[in-house]
Image (cartoon, rainbow, N blue to C red):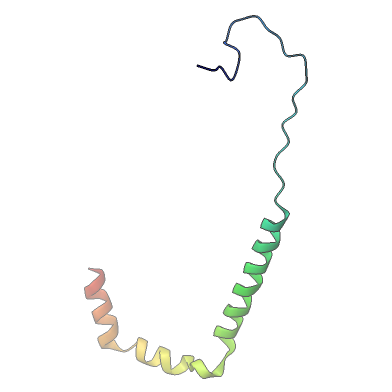
Length: 75
C-alpha cells in the first residue's frame, strides 16, 4: 500500500511556503457577457416587435373566463 502524504503527528514541518492561487477563468466572464447581451437582445425584441401584438394578447388574456380559469387552477 502506498502513502500519498506523511502521517499526522510526525513532527515534520513544511520547508516550502505553499501559496494557493485561485484558478482564473477569463472565458467564463466572456461567456457570461455574451449570454447577457443575447438575453437583452431577446427581451428588447420581444417587447418592441409589433408582430407580437401585445394589445391583442392582453385583450384575450384578461378576459373574465381566462381569469376565472386561472383562479380555479391556482386554488
